[in-house]
Length: 200
Image (tube, rainbow, N blue to C red):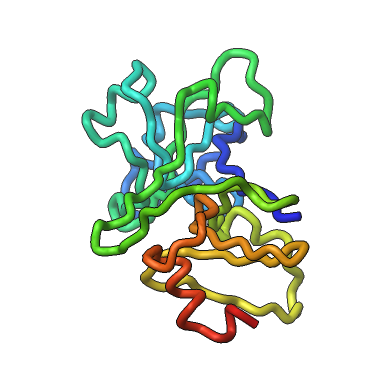
């Protein structure tokens, strides 16, 4: 069974490190991520909610300082990458708590461009399959590998995701978000028809 990907906004402990190019800024490590923060806003040991890049924050008081820029992105601040955003954790929060839902934060889902003939009627999921999966940022899980361990790395380049399953002699064809009714005008069913390796 495949596991659905989970995007979270976890509570972390702040430990300030000097920014090499700005006295008023500091660096905070969150796993393999780095955030640039205003030094005066934080003390070592403070709790913060870490918001990953490609998160969409709501128009609430906590995020007024972002103006109209609601999608969190990685950016350079005085020569250092800030990958994500830290905000003060709510009262009573504990390290590891996930505040994504409570803060009204959602993961960014890019729109599929109209030049893909992607429509088609959706059908139910095959047994044991979730309707959505996603690619997670490696930095969030880098600790699962050991030094010297051999791994295979794959990369998704430009295009759209698809998935195929044959269960109890029934073929299921789907996009990243939905399983699709058989239709030879549909992008994912076309892919199946044109590539023998998928049929196999």
